[in-house]
Image (cartoon, rainbow, N blue to C red; front, side):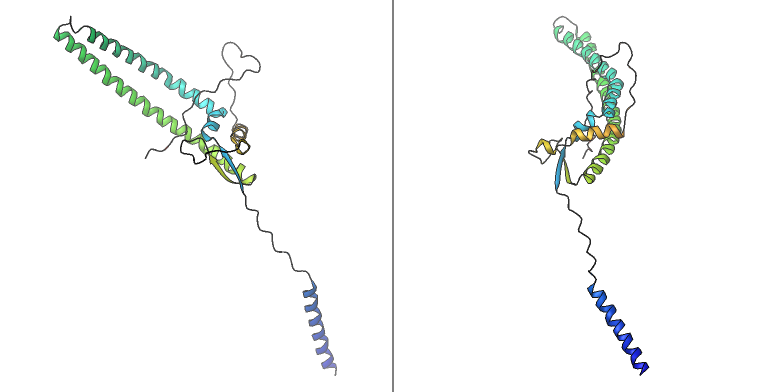
Length: 216
């Protein structure tokens, strides 16, 4: 009898435990993560140019290659002058003088072409290095901003091949990205030489070539 009572007690405890488990509300399933649906646009080229680092890089490029451009213009002016001299003096100059002057013009033209090609190649290397660094930093900031603010897509409207035909200004995050970039990558202000700029005056942004585009 005691044995049957023990078995009944065990059965009752088992039924009670099952009933208690069934009475407990099931744990809610985790809510699915919200799918981002917002879209933003940015003029990437403009954003990079307007950052403090972009303006500083542009100034450094101009400082380095400005004298070469001036030298190129000087040489071209000399060639133009000699060419004009040859054209105007054909009726009075001897054949030997004309051949000598023409050879001089050809030599100077060849030299100038090589000078321009070398300068252009060096400038492209510097531009690719600087542009790659700036666009890489900006890309990281854009990605982080998009994730934190629930953007599904960020489109670059700063290229001629952009598929965006129109976008509301409210979706443009160019200014926000410039501010964030300058906060994350501050540029130390160098004291200007000579007269101090007027209070509140803003330096004009120097032009900077667009981020490098890989050649096909």
